[in-house]
Image: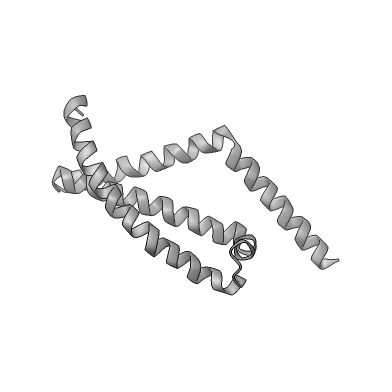
Length: 130
């Protein structure tokens, strides 16, 4: 009976997450949060008299790493067992797998985000006169 209750609770949790993940409201809130991180970090560094390219680049890194860490962290919290089964690893090995994904994908993504956000942001600031 305990196994049945755990399976039922896990299924209910997955159903709730799937409902939230496919909801337009949840997607809108998540998008706004990511944009807020970029903007807040940029203005924080700009107030510290950092150069505009550095502020924009750091905002790109902060936004990118926040996204990567939140997604992989939520996989650990909600889908650890399912993720382990899907990739054929033991549940205890998932922490290493997630850390490897963050390092191999998250860091290069952050570097590329820093470059793109710095240059595109500079152009947008010039044209929008922000």
